[in-house]
Every structure is written in structure tokens, then in C-alpha cells.
Length: 275
Image (cartoon, rainbow, N blue to C red; front, top):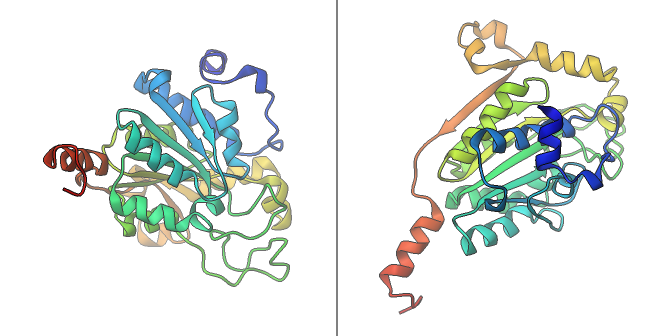
């Protein structure tokens, strides 16, 4: 099954990928491809958009209509594509820095508009491609090349940020819980409106080494023990959930989708905007 998925949805001439050994990005990229497979979406109807960063290399490996854009601007480019061709499924693959630092304004306004994009955040809590600087999601007092004495900033919860900005679907996934995260991506794609799935990825090379998180196996084991699927969390006490991260949907509403509303406006004015 995995080999067939690669042949169908990957550009084999671009493989092997250049992510570091043990990087979680390959797992999350596979989850995106599996979600598309499960939904039986025609390849020609899918567009993958990425910005700049380790995660954003996925656009080069996935064999769809793809565009690798400038740093922080993936959602802006995706917005233009969705407005021009609303019948397409536009999926943004982005990192925590790309989405919530330089691209933060694009994120909150796409969420506010409720435009029908699916944003999958490969969140490894660091700027991995450029040397391990701390990012908006680096936990307090963790280390980075730009935080040699520890990061004193409070981190963003990207899923909550999107939900607060008006995203009609916001969820959390991770590298370890493959089946659950794939299902969340499927639900995000099927949802008619702005969807964001914030996926905790492991970065053993920069974040892991800098913060003494142990081996790749130990980092995955940490996610297994501390990232709790929402079905399991329902049967746990507040004390048992303290310090844990819940994997699942945190917001699901039905608001009018932006491109549908825009097309209604165009029809209303007879195709002459501004009349």
C-alpha cells in the first residue's frame, strides 16, 4: 500500500527526500497523500501550496498541481488560487514559522474570511531549515540558536489562534498518531470553509539535540505518552490531562464560505463589481 501511494502521489524522480533522518515531515506528508487517497480526489483537482521551510519542500515531492511560494505567503497565494478556481481543493503545507510568524497576518485573515482552504501545519517548534532558531511555537525556556539561554516568549497555540480568528474547522494532530491525524486532514479537506490542522512534528536534528530530547524513538515515545486523542481524553481526569496535548477537533462550525459568497455577490451585480 505504501509503495502504491508513493507511485501514485509522489514525484519519484525527486526522491529520496532531503529531510534529516527521523524528521516527522515525511510522515505528515504521507498523511496528506493518504487523506487525498481516502477521499478519492482526482489529482488534477488538487493543488498543493507551500511557502519556505523544511515542511514546504513537500510541494516538490507531491505529484499534484503544486506551487512553492515565498516565505510566509503560502496562504496568500492559495487564496488567489481558490478565488480564481473555487472548484479546486487547495491544500497549504506550511511550518510553524512560515504560518504564524512572517505569515501570521495571512493566517488570521484567511481564517476570518472562512475561505475554503485546508492548511496543514508541520509544527516542529523551530526554524529547522535555517539553523534551529526559536519559533513562535517553541515552548518557554527551551533552547534555540537564537535563544542560547532559553526562550522567554510564550508560544502560540496555532489551532487556538486560527479558531479565535474565525476558522470554522481547527484541529490538532501529531507525528505519532498517524491514523487519527490522517482522519483530521480528511475532515479538514471535506469541510466547506477554512480548515487548519496543527500537526506536532518531531525535529531530532535541531530542536531535539538542542533541547536534549533524546533519540528519534524517544521523541516519538514522548508523543505517544503525552499527546492524547480526544476520545481517550474524555475518560481522563483534569489531573491526568495536566501537561498533555489533546489530539482532535477543537472547533467545527458552519459559516458561509468566502468564495461561495463572493460568487453570489458577482451574480447579484451582474458580473460588474462596483456597480
